[in-house]
Length: 109
Length: 209
Image 1 (spheres, each protein chain N blue to C red):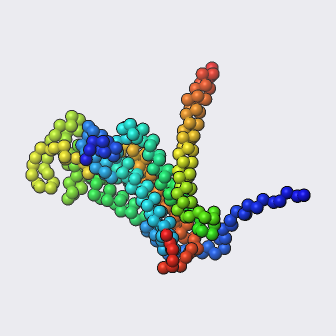
Image 2: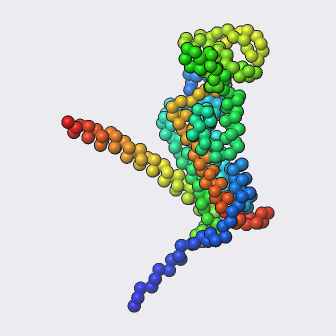
Image 3: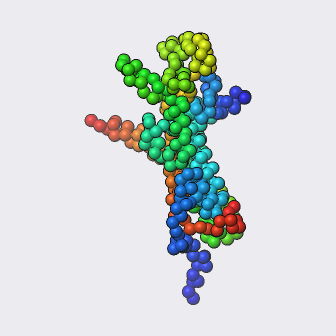
């Protein structure tokens, strides 16, 4: 198995071969961004399951639209919304802690 | 002259008057993710739920290792993971009974109080007794001589002698645990949807995909 594929699967090059599903992944590689890129499959998983129970049947769908096209579109939109919301929450938390709290701290007597 | 009203069709109203309890579908959904919807004739929804729930659950185990499913050390999180069904219970049972070791508790009196815990990096597991066998010095990492439980031979340890699983910490543990618990919670939504759901088409009827 090539080194590139192993690194993609979270294998640390300096450690014995990692056993999938038994050992944790190494998320220090650049592709993982410390684990933040795993937000994408997490959001997709949530969207896939939620829209599977929410996409309506034919009598309640827009005319001419197949079930799969409606499902795929809504799933993609929901996944993007989840990711965007997480990013917005992270930005708001950063602004609160790094900007507002520091500003209050600087003005404290 | 009055302006004509909008010709857009009114939003569809979904009539819930025919919703009935579906206990068989609910029980099947508890056992296998998506089975409840498949029983009600919605094969594609059932397949999507099955794929999504088990994809999230096993994806979490892939990220954090099997250590993320642990009813003893992470009981609250395990309550959410258990909503995936017997698959989660079987995974935890395998983790507790086939991967963890019976070893001394932390502290100077630990040898007198063995506990069930994850094996340390310098230990292997005796498959017959479940007890730990130290194969490397815990401070220097130097290999030690030990009795191989598989062959009964006394030999020096090699890098291939390692614990049954590696305990995960930090971000992989957080993400893996979270993915498993979210899989269980999403499956709960699917169980409720299957249990409070009118059959969209009769069993064996046309369609379903």
